[in-house]
Length: 196
Image 1 (tube, rainbow, N blue to C red):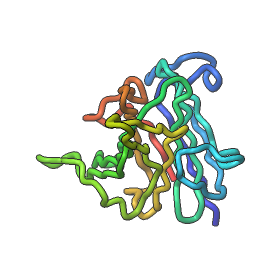
Image 2: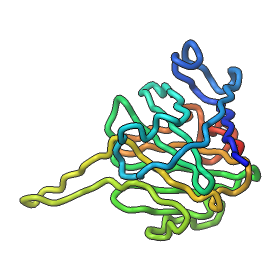
Image 3: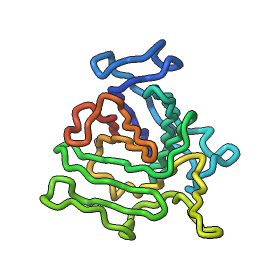
């Protein structure tokens, strides 16, 4: 049986989807994400790689394209800032009870399993059920350089997802940008909401 990933988004939607900027109080946009083949999470938009994905254009005011699709084992998430180059991302996820965790991509993979704990530090190298591209960095003549990706790509094993429904917040880094624009990290009420 093929699963469809339904997205209930309560956030600022770009003009191409909502006819203008929308606030969290505006009507909900419901989108079905196709069941499709996987991606190579290397930070580049390969030919045809995301063609079968649902793409949401979010205005924050910078434009972010949020791409989603799934197969029988993984959910694929692509986050592409069309206006600004970012060199890191934290993808916050929460279950229906509000239990929050973080997937981090920069020069390394990191994960914070329980944001509700007293000391919720980020731990690197424990991404057993997910992967994504990294931001390459190198040194030349005593100076550090970064090779920023075209897109931040996540491949998340469905066993990692907390329940059939979850919420998500995007925190792009260097420079900082949070989406949905009216969301806050400490409360999941205005995060993107997904139902499997």
